[in-house]
Length: 525
Image: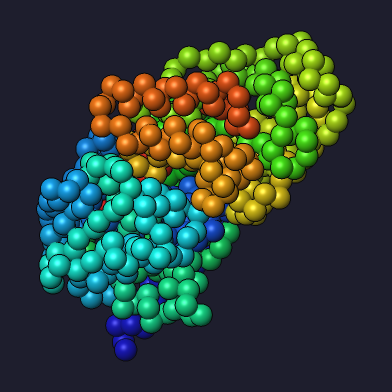
């Protein structure tokens, strides 16, 4: 009881520091303080969380059977699985589990793997389409994930894909393994513990969620049962919506890391003593999402074409973002096999006007434009508002908290919005499945959010993932990119380059190409 009281007092002090105003105080020696926006967070359940904040947390809270190498994401290495063997049928994998414990002290068992994967499919939240790629559905997944013995679990699938692709899927956050006993005890109304996991964790990663207050702070605490104990005791991810405040925090030493700063903030810190700016290549692709079901104009391919010529790509990348992004106009990011690097579109207002006129689309008209109330989204939205207006399209910018904007986008309650897509695993199909699959609106993809039903493109995408010849497969994904680049309700604009400001006192911070590759376990101060 005394130990629990001391622990509670410590966490209270840490949380009070997280929420304190901008006071000039060094961060605690055993605590990493990160200043960023966490307003996008919807759920910390790995079967549901699909936002930047939550995805960045999962590698620190959970482990999967296998994981992407930190330095080269295309390489897959053991995690909870000590080893694995592909079946001779080409549609199965048997995993031997390593010795590991959850934060609760419970051992990781085959039953936990089974529970985690089956619940993710049955919950059918936004990232469920990743596991659906194996042919797993609510009515067949129980038979697909089975216990062999106390140390082995077997996965089988019906989809026409190989073991290599299946392993890639299993590196995605949705494949994180949760503690069945802990989560089941918190289940209500057959929700598989989803309500509880929205704000708690039950993993075997380096950290566990100590406390979370939406729109204020997420506090992580070292997992004493982790097989690889972190160097620091706590990580505070503090919600600081204002980018100027983030800059001030890291500049004065009240934060160790600041993310999401605007270009002006970065420029001001580049020559400051005590801090350094990391430039981390990112697989994030930015795009405009149009709701084709909102009205006939937004569903008209001529409007999609005109919109492509109403974006000041170079101006946004070079003048507005200044090193934080580069122009990129296809759905596969550079660094992935088959990514297109051509940029066929540029700002051409007269061409856009002609496309609209030829299609009989009368101007002026207004489009509701919902955006995250954060930078650089607001600045990009204002640039788009200016260029679209030149063609008689008045963008009504409606800023909102990111979690609300996400919810509206997923429910189809929008006309136009800014989005970014981050691959869920290192394979071209990760992005292709989002933008080029939607046969009947039954799967949660970006195409579904656009209301864009594409049975033929869906078949082509499914054929690409089945192709075993590497060169032919690349060619298929390039063809898909060209088709979507030319005509779709997605206008791809940029590929990100994350600029992270860190204190000189911070050592061994690691961040990879993909969004979930944020690691706090090796950080020292």
